[in-house]
Figure 1 (spheres, rainbow, N blue to C red):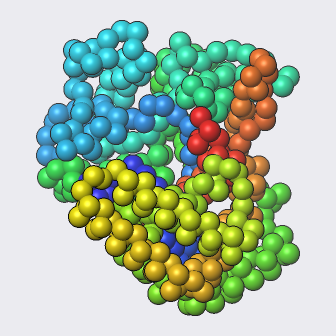
Figure 2 (tube, rainbow, N blue to C red):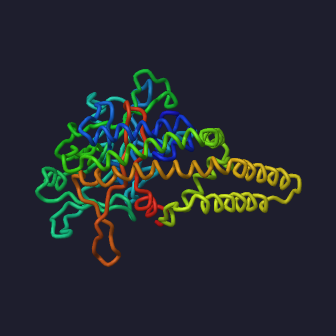
Figure 3 (cartoon, one colour):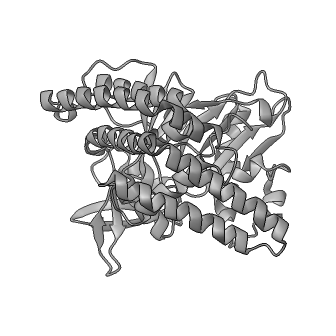
Length: 404
């Protein structure tokens, strides 16, 4: 399903996925962010909060039919996994299963919104809590409605005094929808395209609380300062110079993305070793040397898994070719690393400002019965409704994800 919102990419990874065009797109997003934080934002540009919800929910009518369903990401398997009614849900998720309550409540409260025509198409979002999974608790001195959708994830707090506090106390379920798929001209799931930043908060009922994924209004206290604007201009100028210098190498990575052992996919895996260690790239030369070692180890492990000499020979040839691409493009690879860091540095200016605008508080359990102050999973920037990327502090949330 080409248009499914199953995996959004990090802003900086666009230069690996899409080469030179990805670099231009990345700086286009940064331009829009700069305007948004300078009170010059366009209506076609939106920023949404990524909720650490579970499970991911898809529901609506299948294209060309009146068959309503609820599903997880298995909806997009070769043989879709979806459920039309209570009997089908309980066949796979009997009472007591983690997913039973979530699917039954979606069936009870969201299906009627489709039947009445208030929700059109297929919507995607996250299940946040039920009346049985949320608790009332005092955290850091605040009386809160507390919920933790993922077992080892973020704990959310809707504090007393917020206009949604009483609603959250009374609701049977709470969901957040962020994406809609228009089914009017589609013949199958493969025909659908994602429309991001979908907002259905106006459809909340007393027993069904629907939250918005859109970030709060940007106040004057989070606008860009003149020094920050100047810094962003320097990043943009440097970035444009860098992607012109390393453009051919960017396109080589992009062209290899469908090959699991291509230089692009391997580069993304190697970068994630830094994320896992919550470490920034401070030396392009060390990164380059480490990448060569990583590639050779990855290939040799693959080679050692075969017994036939002929197969080993094929993979050895591929290993030497991959290493040769990196070594013959050393200077461009070093420029790529500098470009990657430049985009990350520019992105890092905006994330703290977005966090200041959050309506609800987030915490991580400290393992001692208390809580450490946390931050959202991250954000999604959306251009023209259909072009979206993740804005995440990967040394914080992504690192925690890898460590779970």
